[in-house]
Amino acid sequence: MKPTERQLQILMAIVKEYINTGTPVGSKALSEALPFSVSSATIRNEMGELIGQGYLIQPHTSAGRVPSVKGFKLYVNGLASGKLDKRDKSMIDNMLPEADDPEKLLENAGRALAAITNYAAVMTTPSDGDVSLIRVDTVQLGSRTGLIILLTSAGAVRNKIYRLSCDITPELQQAFMNIVKEWFIGKRLSDISMSYVQTVSASLPLDIMMAAPMLVALAQAAAEAGTSHVKMNGGDHLLCEFNGEEARSIFEFLRSEEDMLSLLKTAGDEIGVIFGDDTGRNELKTSSVVVKKYNFGKSAAGSLGIIGPLRMDYEKLIPKIDYFTKIFESRIKEVFSKYFGE
Image (tube, rainbow, N blue to C red; front, side, top):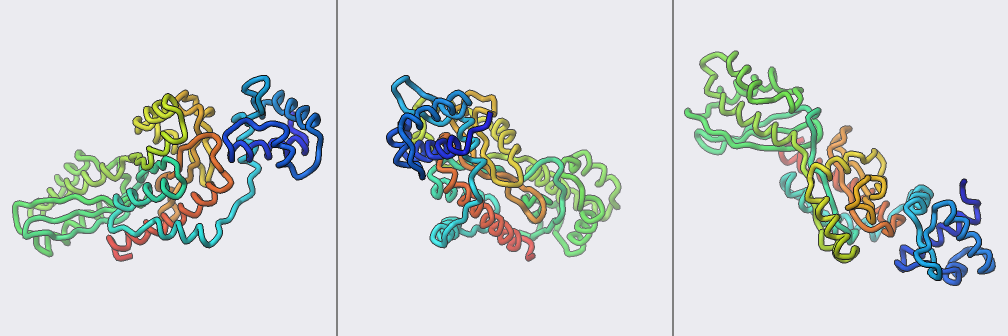
Protein backbone atom coordinates (compact mmCIF):
# COMPACT_ATOMS: atom_id res chain seq x y z
CA MET A 1 0.00 0.00 0.00
CA LYS A 2 1.39 3.39 -1.02
CA PRO A 3 1.17 6.47 1.22
CA THR A 4 -1.39 9.12 0.37
CA GLU A 5 -0.12 12.55 -0.69
CA ARG A 6 -0.61 13.88 2.84
CA GLN A 7 1.10 10.87 4.38
CA LEU A 8 3.98 11.32 1.96
CA GLN A 9 4.42 14.95 3.00
CA ILE A 10 4.33 13.94 6.66
CA LEU A 11 6.93 11.24 6.03
CA MET A 12 9.23 13.64 4.17
CA ALA A 13 8.94 16.15 7.02
CA ILE A 14 9.75 13.47 9.60
CA VAL A 15 12.83 12.34 7.66
CA LYS A 16 14.13 15.90 7.36
CA GLU A 17 13.50 16.62 11.04
CA TYR A 18 15.17 13.36 12.08
CA ILE A 19 18.20 14.11 9.87
CA ASN A 20 18.54 17.51 11.55
CA THR A 21 18.05 16.42 15.17
CA GLY A 22 18.80 12.70 15.36
CA THR A 23 15.93 12.27 17.82
CA PRO A 24 12.45 10.73 17.38
CA VAL A 25 9.96 13.20 15.94
CA GLY A 26 6.76 13.93 17.84
CA SER A 27 3.46 15.30 16.53
CA LYS A 28 4.04 18.78 18.02
CA ALA A 29 7.41 19.29 16.34
CA LEU A 30 6.02 17.84 13.15
CA SER A 31 3.02 20.16 13.04
CA GLU A 32 5.44 23.13 13.02
CA ALA A 33 7.44 21.64 10.14
CA LEU A 34 4.54 20.79 7.84
CA PRO A 35 3.60 23.14 4.99
CA PHE A 36 -0.11 22.75 5.83
CA SER A 37 -2.24 23.06 8.97
CA VAL A 38 -3.61 19.89 10.53
CA SER A 39 -4.50 18.79 14.07
CA SER A 40 -2.10 16.78 16.24
CA ALA A 41 -4.67 13.97 16.41
CA THR A 42 -4.74 13.74 12.60
CA ILE A 43 -0.94 13.73 12.48
CA ARG A 44 -0.81 10.88 15.02
CA ASN A 45 -3.34 8.90 13.00
CA GLU A 46 -1.34 9.39 9.80
CA MET A 47 1.87 8.43 11.55
CA GLY A 48 0.15 5.29 12.77
CA GLU A 49 -0.75 4.45 9.17
CA LEU A 50 2.87 5.01 8.10
CA ILE A 51 4.05 2.68 10.87
CA GLY A 52 1.66 0.05 9.62
CA GLN A 53 3.00 0.47 6.09
CA GLY A 54 6.58 0.05 7.35
CA TYR A 55 7.81 3.59 6.67
CA LEU A 56 8.13 4.67 10.32
CA ILE A 57 9.23 3.11 13.59
CA GLN A 58 8.15 4.07 17.10
CA PRO A 59 11.03 3.13 19.45
CA HIS A 60 8.86 3.35 22.57
CA THR A 61 5.15 3.73 23.27
CA SER A 62 5.47 7.32 24.40
CA ALA A 63 8.27 8.27 22.00
CA GLY A 64 8.12 10.06 18.68
CA ARG A 65 8.71 8.34 15.36
CA VAL A 66 11.84 7.69 13.32
CA PRO A 67 12.09 6.70 9.65
CA SER A 68 12.69 3.06 8.81
CA VAL A 69 15.06 2.02 6.03
CA LYS A 70 11.97 1.76 3.82
CA GLY A 71 11.10 5.35 4.75
CA PHE A 72 14.62 6.59 3.97
CA LYS A 73 14.49 4.84 0.60
CA LEU A 74 11.25 6.56 -0.32
CA TYR A 75 12.72 9.88 0.75
CA VAL A 76 15.92 9.43 -1.28
CA ASN A 77 14.01 8.27 -4.36
CA GLY A 78 11.86 11.38 -4.16
CA LEU A 79 14.75 13.82 -4.04
CA ALA A 80 15.03 16.14 -7.00
CA SER A 81 18.39 16.48 -8.72
CA GLY A 82 20.06 19.14 -6.59
CA LYS A 83 22.51 21.79 -7.72
CA LEU A 84 25.44 23.27 -5.88
CA ASP A 85 25.94 26.97 -5.43
CA LYS A 86 29.16 28.67 -6.51
CA ARG A 87 30.57 28.63 -2.97
CA ASP A 88 30.30 24.83 -2.65
CA LYS A 89 31.76 24.32 -6.12
CA SER A 90 34.68 26.60 -5.32
CA MET A 91 35.30 24.72 -2.04
CA ILE A 92 35.45 21.38 -3.85
CA ASP A 93 37.68 22.79 -6.59
CA ASN A 94 40.15 24.08 -4.00
CA MET A 95 40.08 21.03 -1.71
CA LEU A 96 40.91 18.56 -4.49
CA PRO A 97 44.46 19.59 -5.44
CA GLU A 98 46.34 18.50 -8.51
CA ALA A 99 48.82 15.63 -8.25
CA ASP A 100 51.81 14.34 -10.22
CA ASP A 101 50.87 10.66 -10.16
CA PRO A 102 47.70 8.54 -9.90
CA GLU A 103 48.42 7.12 -6.44
CA LYS A 104 48.93 10.59 -4.99
CA LEU A 105 45.75 11.78 -6.70
CA LEU A 106 43.73 8.98 -5.07
CA GLU A 107 45.17 9.84 -1.65
CA ASN A 108 44.36 13.52 -2.14
CA ALA A 109 40.86 12.72 -3.36
CA GLY A 110 40.08 10.45 -0.42
CA ARG A 111 41.20 13.04 2.13
CA ALA A 112 39.30 15.79 0.31
CA LEU A 113 36.07 13.79 0.07
CA ALA A 114 36.19 12.96 3.79
CA ALA A 115 36.81 16.63 4.67
CA ILE A 116 34.06 17.92 2.36
CA THR A 117 31.38 15.53 3.65
CA ASN A 118 32.58 14.89 7.23
CA TYR A 119 32.11 11.17 6.66
CA ALA A 120 34.44 8.25 6.00
CA ALA A 121 35.41 8.23 2.31
CA VAL A 122 36.11 5.09 0.28
CA MET A 123 37.59 4.85 -3.20
CA THR A 124 38.49 1.93 -5.45
CA THR A 125 41.50 2.01 -7.71
CA PRO A 126 41.02 0.96 -11.34
CA SER A 127 40.51 -1.85 -12.52
CA ASP A 128 39.63 -5.51 -13.17
CA GLY A 129 40.71 -8.37 -15.41
CA ASP A 130 38.61 -7.29 -18.40
CA VAL A 131 40.57 -4.05 -18.75
CA SER A 132 43.02 -3.87 -21.64
CA LEU A 133 46.41 -2.28 -22.22
CA ILE A 134 46.19 0.82 -24.42
CA ARG A 135 49.56 2.59 -24.06
CA VAL A 136 53.16 1.82 -23.07
CA ASP A 137 56.10 4.21 -22.80
CA THR A 138 59.69 3.85 -21.62
CA VAL A 139 61.93 6.28 -19.75
CA GLN A 140 65.68 5.69 -19.57
CA LEU A 141 67.02 6.20 -16.03
CA GLY A 142 70.62 5.11 -16.52
CA SER A 143 72.86 3.39 -19.01
CA ARG A 144 71.29 0.01 -18.20
CA THR A 145 68.15 0.88 -16.21
CA GLY A 146 64.83 2.26 -17.33
CA LEU A 147 61.17 2.64 -16.45
CA ILE A 148 58.19 1.00 -18.14
CA ILE A 149 54.98 3.08 -17.90
CA LEU A 150 51.64 1.66 -18.96
CA LEU A 151 48.11 2.99 -19.27
CA THR A 152 44.99 0.80 -19.19
CA SER A 153 41.57 1.31 -20.74
CA ALA A 154 40.19 2.01 -17.25
CA GLY A 155 42.69 4.80 -16.68
CA ALA A 156 45.12 3.02 -14.39
CA VAL A 157 48.76 4.05 -14.72
CA ARG A 158 51.50 1.77 -13.42
CA ASN A 159 55.27 1.79 -13.79
CA LYS A 160 58.09 -0.67 -13.19
CA ILE A 161 61.86 -0.35 -13.23
CA TYR A 162 63.87 -2.78 -15.36
CA ARG A 163 67.60 -3.52 -15.51
CA LEU A 164 69.48 -4.91 -18.50
CA SER A 165 72.79 -6.71 -18.75
CA CYS A 166 73.75 -4.44 -21.64
CA ASP A 167 73.53 -0.74 -22.44
CA ILE A 168 70.16 0.63 -23.50
CA THR A 169 70.30 1.84 -27.09
CA PRO A 170 67.71 3.64 -29.20
CA GLU A 171 67.58 0.57 -31.42
CA LEU A 172 66.78 -1.71 -28.48
CA GLN A 173 64.10 0.64 -27.20
CA GLN A 174 62.54 0.78 -30.65
CA ALA A 175 62.64 -3.01 -30.93
CA PHE A 176 60.86 -3.24 -27.56
CA MET A 177 58.16 -0.80 -28.67
CA ASN A 178 57.62 -2.84 -31.84
CA ILE A 179 57.14 -5.96 -29.73
CA VAL A 180 54.68 -4.10 -27.50
CA LYS A 181 52.67 -2.90 -30.47
CA GLU A 182 52.48 -6.36 -32.02
CA TRP A 183 51.95 -8.52 -28.93
CA PHE A 184 50.61 -6.40 -26.07
CA ILE A 185 48.59 -3.33 -27.08
CA GLY A 186 44.88 -4.14 -26.85
CA LYS A 187 45.57 -7.28 -24.83
CA ARG A 188 43.51 -7.90 -21.69
CA LEU A 189 45.55 -7.42 -18.53
CA SER A 190 44.47 -10.82 -17.26
CA ASP A 191 46.10 -12.39 -20.34
CA ILE A 192 49.47 -10.66 -19.86
CA SER A 193 50.97 -13.35 -17.65
CA MET A 194 54.57 -14.45 -17.20
CA SER A 195 53.84 -17.53 -19.31
CA TYR A 196 52.61 -15.23 -22.08
CA VAL A 197 55.83 -13.21 -21.81
CA GLN A 198 57.84 -16.43 -22.10
CA THR A 199 55.90 -17.35 -25.24
CA VAL A 200 56.58 -13.94 -26.76
CA SER A 201 60.27 -14.05 -25.76
CA ALA A 202 60.71 -17.47 -27.37
CA SER A 203 59.64 -16.03 -30.71
CA LEU A 204 62.07 -13.10 -30.63
CA PRO A 205 65.24 -12.94 -32.72
CA LEU A 206 68.43 -13.47 -30.75
CA ASP A 207 69.63 -9.91 -31.30
CA ILE A 208 66.73 -8.45 -29.28
CA MET A 209 66.49 -11.11 -26.58
CA MET A 210 68.19 -8.57 -24.31
CA ALA A 211 64.80 -6.83 -24.11
CA ALA A 212 63.32 -9.75 -22.14
CA PRO A 213 63.70 -7.96 -18.74
CA MET A 214 61.66 -5.08 -20.19
CA LEU A 215 58.86 -7.52 -21.06
CA VAL A 216 59.00 -8.99 -17.55
CA ALA A 217 58.67 -5.50 -16.06
CA LEU A 218 55.72 -4.86 -18.37
CA ALA A 219 53.98 -8.04 -17.18
CA GLN A 220 54.58 -7.12 -13.53
CA ALA A 221 53.14 -3.64 -14.05
CA ALA A 222 50.13 -5.12 -15.89
CA ALA A 223 49.48 -7.51 -12.98
CA GLU A 224 49.46 -4.60 -10.53
CA ALA A 225 47.21 -2.51 -12.78
CA GLY A 226 44.73 -5.38 -13.07
CA THR A 227 44.20 -5.60 -9.30
CA SER A 228 41.72 -3.19 -7.78
CA HIS A 229 42.17 -1.92 -4.22
CA VAL A 230 40.08 0.05 -1.74
CA LYS A 231 41.42 3.16 -0.03
CA MET A 232 39.69 4.69 2.99
CA ASN A 233 40.09 8.11 4.57
CA GLY A 234 38.37 9.84 7.46
CA GLY A 235 37.75 6.73 9.53
CA ASP A 236 37.65 8.92 12.64
CA HIS A 237 34.28 10.26 11.44
CA LEU A 238 32.81 6.80 12.08
CA LEU A 239 33.63 7.19 15.77
CA CYS A 240 31.67 10.45 15.84
CA GLU A 241 28.58 9.06 14.10
CA PHE A 242 28.23 5.57 15.59
CA ASN A 243 28.40 4.05 19.04
CA GLY A 244 31.45 1.98 19.89
CA GLU A 245 30.01 -1.40 18.90
CA GLU A 246 28.58 -0.11 15.60
CA ALA A 247 31.84 1.63 14.68
CA ARG A 248 33.84 -1.51 15.51
CA SER A 249 31.59 -3.62 13.25
CA ILE A 250 31.93 -1.18 10.35
CA PHE A 251 35.71 -1.06 10.76
CA GLU A 252 35.79 -4.85 10.62
CA PHE A 253 33.88 -4.80 7.36
CA LEU A 254 36.14 -2.11 5.91
CA ARG A 255 39.21 -4.22 6.68
CA SER A 256 37.98 -6.82 4.19
CA GLU A 257 39.03 -5.39 0.85
CA GLU A 258 37.19 -8.14 -1.00
CA ASP A 259 33.90 -7.26 0.73
CA MET A 260 34.31 -3.55 0.08
CA LEU A 261 35.13 -4.11 -3.59
CA SER A 262 32.07 -6.31 -3.96
CA LEU A 263 29.87 -3.65 -2.34
CA LEU A 264 31.22 -0.69 -4.32
CA LYS A 265 31.02 -2.55 -7.63
CA THR A 266 27.23 -2.56 -7.26
CA ALA A 267 27.27 1.18 -7.94
CA GLY A 268 25.39 2.26 -11.03
CA ASP A 269 26.24 4.92 -13.57
CA GLU A 270 24.19 7.44 -11.58
CA ILE A 271 24.97 8.35 -8.00
CA GLY A 272 23.06 6.10 -5.61
CA VAL A 273 22.56 5.10 -2.01
CA ILE A 274 23.25 1.56 -0.81
CA PHE A 275 21.42 0.96 2.46
CA GLY A 276 23.26 -1.37 4.79
CA ASP A 277 20.09 -3.28 5.53
CA ASP A 278 20.02 -4.39 1.87
CA THR A 279 23.54 -5.81 1.91
CA GLY A 280 22.75 -8.70 4.23
CA ARG A 281 25.72 -7.69 6.39
CA ASN A 282 25.02 -7.05 10.07
CA GLU A 283 28.11 -4.82 10.23
CA LEU A 284 26.38 -2.27 7.96
CA LYS A 285 22.84 -2.56 9.30
CA THR A 286 22.76 0.96 10.79
CA SER A 287 24.69 2.65 7.99
CA SER A 288 24.42 3.57 4.33
CA VAL A 289 26.84 4.25 1.48
CA VAL A 290 26.48 7.05 -1.05
CA VAL A 291 28.47 5.88 -4.06
CA LYS A 292 29.18 6.83 -7.66
CA LYS A 293 31.34 5.42 -10.43
CA TYR A 294 34.08 7.54 -11.91
CA ASN A 295 35.14 7.18 -15.51
CA PHE A 296 38.24 7.40 -17.63
CA GLY A 297 37.13 8.40 -21.11
CA LYS A 298 34.03 6.34 -21.80
CA SER A 299 34.97 3.47 -19.48
CA ALA A 300 34.09 3.04 -15.81
CA ALA A 301 37.35 3.07 -13.86
CA GLY A 302 36.36 2.76 -10.21
CA SER A 303 33.96 3.94 -7.54
CA LEU A 304 34.04 6.57 -4.83
CA GLY A 305 31.69 7.26 -1.98
CA ILE A 306 31.10 7.86 1.70
CA ILE A 307 29.92 5.71 4.59
CA GLY A 308 27.75 7.21 7.29
CA PRO A 309 24.62 6.71 9.37
CA LEU A 310 21.16 6.27 7.85
CA ARG A 311 20.28 9.85 8.76
CA MET A 312 22.83 11.51 6.49
CA ASP A 313 21.65 14.68 4.76
CA TYR A 314 21.32 13.07 1.32
CA GLU A 315 19.78 16.19 -0.19
CA LYS A 316 23.03 18.10 0.35
CA LEU A 317 25.52 15.25 0.04
CA ILE A 318 24.40 13.76 -3.28
CA PRO A 319 25.02 16.97 -5.32
CA LYS A 320 28.40 17.42 -3.60
CA ILE A 321 29.57 13.89 -4.43
CA ASP A 322 28.23 14.18 -7.96
CA TYR A 323 30.21 17.38 -8.59
CA PHE A 324 33.26 16.00 -6.76
CA THR A 325 33.29 13.04 -9.16
CA LYS A 326 33.33 15.33 -12.20
CA ILE A 327 36.27 17.31 -10.83
CA PHE A 328 38.10 14.12 -9.89
CA GLU A 329 37.70 12.80 -13.45
CA SER A 330 39.19 16.03 -14.82
CA ARG A 331 42.15 15.65 -12.43
CA ILE A 332 42.66 12.09 -13.71
CA LYS A 333 42.97 13.39 -17.26
CA GLU A 334 45.51 15.99 -16.12
CA VAL A 335 47.67 13.31 -14.49
CA PHE A 336 47.59 11.13 -17.61
CA SER A 337 48.59 14.06 -19.80
CA LYS A 338 51.69 14.49 -17.63
CA TYR A 339 52.59 10.83 -18.18
CA PHE A 340 51.78 10.54 -21.86
CA GLY A 341 51.63 14.11 -23.16
CA GLU A 342 48.01 13.79 -24.27
